Length: 428
Image: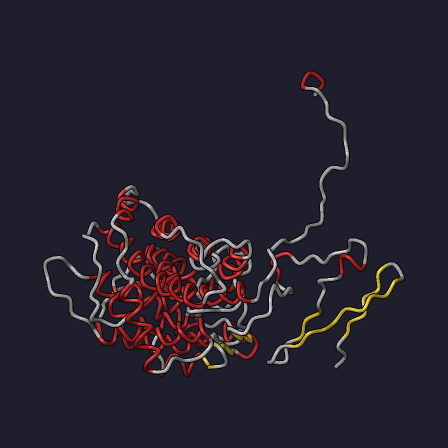
């Protein structure tokens, strides 16, 4: 394979280097294109064909349904690792030893208390506020309580900032739920594991003992692992480009939370449940809605099926489908919404229209079902997504800063008015 691409513009030929990744991906390096061609740029709305960086964190090959973190398959990590192990792997590059994991968890627990003044900020929000708006605001507010910028050249400073946000973010996420439900704010229990503590902080009732369900703990652990990173998606790219201005870690993460809020990104699992609710209100006929989904002239869209990147079965969906089945069986939930979901899933897996087009249920479809069964309100679904994605955002921010990447500054092609004279207001 040639290591150069030849681009001809107005009769002039320009050689552009080709770089290769470790998984045989190739990219034309165009960073010198504009200077070499006197101003010519490329245009790629949505950056679907443009690499913004080189990264050693996550490999994704949609056509083959492959997802790996630092070389480890998502299937193996979901089966054998804990979320905290995966967080360490993503951020620091290797799976932790027992000693490293013990220290990592203890350091996180030591930072898990949030300044009491943050509660005053939370109190200012009405109960009607969307949890993602609250979470983005509280995450950004952490900067005010930690005003010293992270010295990225100091491993100790970087580690302390990472531990601090991994400790406090779950508290903020749980508080957004408890605020919504009018429950007293809870700090959890330092004797519990990371994921166990998340469940306790969210669900402990003030007048009864909290009991952990191991099946729910395992399901949430897997969900967080599956969402921990996903290459250069919208929110991750946002974290990197905000951080490229040397904005701090916490405020860069707050920007990621805001990007994740959008219904085309993190809000997809919420959209699944809203669709299921709408089907229920219309009588719950799944066959009718599968027919509507196949009708090109019908505006109805089947949410939670297919994926922009995966052109095969979403590997995360294979894993979480099993967990969803286990959760529903263990809880014995009788919920018409979940019955409709199972009906849609069955039809999609058997209908040639969906099978031929590889429109399989994706991770958003199953995660919404699990969260619903666990008793998590639909408006909290994206908060749970953010909680899972946190280590990926941190890893990407850290990599970007350590690589000394330049400030993000996309170009544009201007299509507005050409030069014209200003007219005074009486002549307009």
